[in-house]
Image (cartoon, rainbow over all chains, first blue to last red; front, side, top):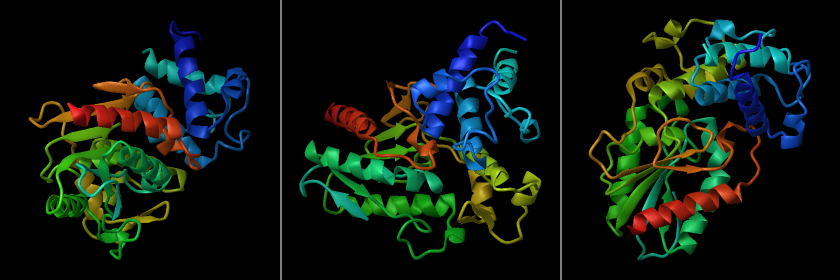
Length: 90
Length: 219
């Protein structure tokens, strides 16, 4: 599902992953919807997830409830983008 | 308490971020104080009870106690020097509210709710599956969060705690990162190093902060 404004949300997620995980700009630019995240990116452990989610909340002015945080939401760059876009652009 | 800079210079007192963020930003703060000293501004980084070198157990720390400790640290500086401002980073903005200060400079200030949200999420990441209401119960042992033991008093304190804002009648400058949409007097283009589990040195951020503080204090 493509919301108008999703590219902006996507770029924000790239920036957050870059800033919180210390990834290079090149590396985050290379993320595609199907790129696996949690469980595949070694930098993205549970503690880093906490930082990523809070930073996303701050930058997108959204609230992410504990019960919305799941393996599925964090599975790929695409699932995270869809989740965040749905909240940010609602 | 770390002190840098000339003996007769105006002094800024740093209120560091809370909990793990204090560790993550310590190198940045020391770098900042060195840069301020090079600009003729003295700086102090106090140890708060229950943090760093303090002998007080972390579970005895509360926001109120930290505020009193910070107020006392500022008062000590006043006895020999001219205090110019507090410099607070993130949750440190909650701590300078009792102190006698002519000015306050805040980087990415947080409310107690913001701190609580961060802590709760860290706890969840570490496997806490309980209800937040459990944490607010009066009795019970301190809560363990990523190596820190947090008393229930502190957890309760956080709920209402607020930094000074532009609505209060104090001389205040709020600086945020350019990625932060909240209101600010000035923005710095840099990453939030307090989020990184292993931050490297950030000379550009330290320099940007030092330059802004020095220019503002001079006005």
